Image (cartoon, rainbow, N blue to C red):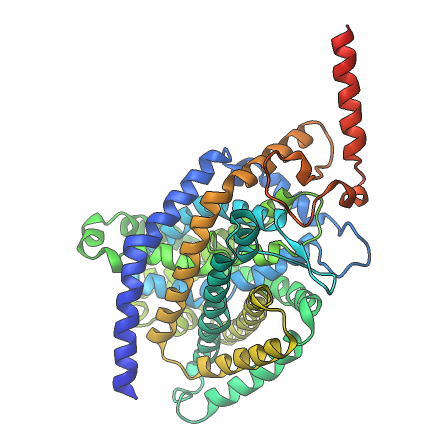
Length: 504
């Protein structure tokens, strides 16, 4: 078994390294920069709107779709997971402290891609038979590009990534948090016990549908995020004298070009981008699945909200993790450099606040990992329904997802990360190419949003107003009356104004 595991680690490592070094990193940077300029840096211009749109209520009372805030929490539940804690520690331990800098850069650039993909998800969303909205890359690839087969390929890649890759990794990180308490947890049955308990709780939520998922994540994510941020702020404030050394460490490592040139595949830039993408998922095609479920009056509103989710994930929560780990690096470099993953985070917090910090981080890992399991499953189910909406198939899929959680609890460190990275890379490549081809519709929607906003009205989107837009299931004239706007009346008023001007 050990030889087989070593072989799998070696093979997946080679695939992982090639995919990111020669394809994905270049594509991520190009797409992010392209949309930053094409949207005139919407991720910076409309920061205020990102927060105001959170308060928007559902526009059709009683419907089974979810609010803008609930959609944010579902996407944030998937983004904010063990990647924000163990992932940051892994990036720092493997690539160096400078990985944090490149995560910051990619979050700002990637927020533009997040805006475009989530806006497209809203434009091309569909209403399911149960009254909920569904959408995402598989849906806008089918409707916008007219290629259902490619939508199915993406859906399969996402299911492999989230239901099996990411959820296996979340389960692994959750179980590995017990190493401090039970060093031989992997061999004495504890890992199996954790897996069974997690399966029971996960099954309770995923058999309850999107509404129950959004309610659970709306409670767990804000509470744990606030508690975790509070601990990080306390750690930072109580070690203010170390902050200049921390930032000096980040900058020196980020621009150590000699080390970068020596091995780009494992460099600080590569690790920063990979762990940053795993954490905030900008451009990956995952968050649009949550964005599409929100009931809003304009697609760009949810696009802006999802850009905010990228900032919450990387600039806020990942930075909190980085500060705690790097303060430990500055104060006790030998001990810090001997650790990786969860043990590094636990010892870093122990260094700042004592043994209580270890217990808190362990609890935080379990809470974040559980919320991520739920958010990830939500994405996978949506894409399974895209391929074939069958109750028997869905039941078999749910059982398989629960089995993947158990397998993740028993997995190895290197193999867990390699599989997650490979699955993530496949779906990201497909999605990035798709949004490059379809991005013009998100840009036209943004122009529409900006024009209405400048006119002093609450933006409402009507698909029929966008010339050349492929047929959509939602957003037509007869469907927007609930938003308090009458597009036909506006059209007639404008025609009268033009005719009057001609007479003059």
